Length: 111
Image 1: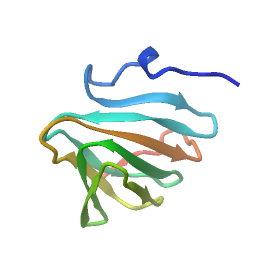
Image 2: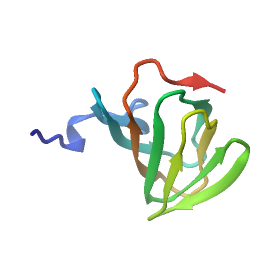
Image 3: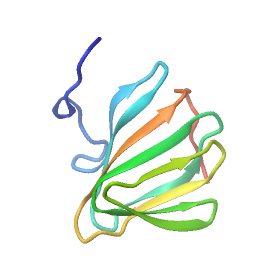
Image 4: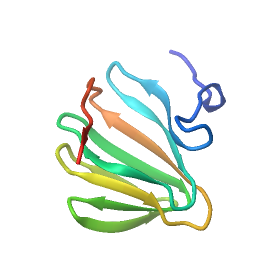
């Protein structure tokens, strides 16, 4: 057993982007913070499924060409091979927990 505090980790882009709390060997999880209008390039995974649980704000997901807006309390599940893009459409920052599994090295492919 071990405990990781979010404050011990850093966002990829300083004050936004993903922040991995656990990165393998079987699971990857963390939080992602998106500033207003910030987005992530479309991508997909061949092995890993990806789940996002929205803690704050509203995030638009486009999964295989289908757009949906997820808000606080929503969980979105994305299967392997489903191309997905996300963008913060909230007036402020949006925050979500992400979980990927099973953990696989080099399993991110840009759309």
